[in-house]
Image (tube, rainbow, N blue to C red; front, side, top):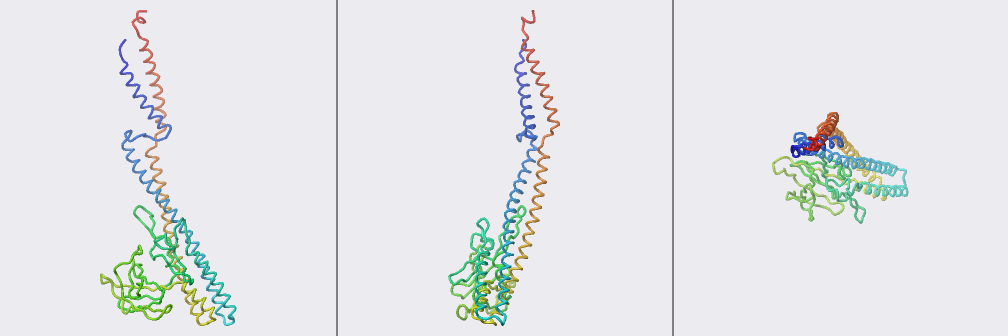
Length: 372
């Protein structure tokens, strides 16, 4: 008998490998099982998978940001409603027919609204404070033992990705929505601001008084003090202190420096309460003007928030569209031609039958059979 075992086994092994490939294609619908099957398809598949991972991550990030933005939007709407309520009650208290008892009752209602505001401005989502600027782990507003509420965050917005290596501002800061501008001063001019008012420069950086109240120091986006400062003089006693910069300097590069003093909206509410308790009609009128400014600031911040939210809505649509595109591309690139696979499977079946038939006949050959 002619020895054909080695050749037959080789052909059988090749058929088995082809059968495994066909079985993989039929069970998964994918053309290749490993990179060596088709390096061109494999390289393209790696590229597409990388893009899918990037855009899936962006989509999740935008979904999280959108959820926070939606809560910020609804919370800010409630804040505006409370500020409007305080304004309405203050107008009632300003009426000449209001007696001290009525004004005292209105003051009590406004105090309750102030406490509700304090809870709203410290809203959190997933352990992040919504209105504390870029320092989301810091409580946005704090209240001292005298009931005075101040902003504890920073004036810088946190950013979120909307594209690969592209970021946009998200949300709104408590500084934007609960304080309002009272004066703006440029280089060469004098600037005076009251105790408790905050100073912001043209780049959005905050300048804070030092402990001695002799200079205001620039702070960076991380809340750390820098070496830049401007001298001030402080006159009067608390709570009526006045801080004055005799002449605003220019920036180090010679460009114009712009300082904006912003007044705390909670202080305006405290002034209204005090005026009502003291039955002071003129003070109530002045405080009402400040409340109007406070409401306008919150309304402006709400508009800014809406614009930023729209940016992320548009980004979500764009990222979703790209995910769909790359998913389709992935299917087109890696999917096996099932018609072709079916034909190959049938061909393999016939070849197996032929080979096993040949093996059977070859094994039956012998000298005894031949002589018989």
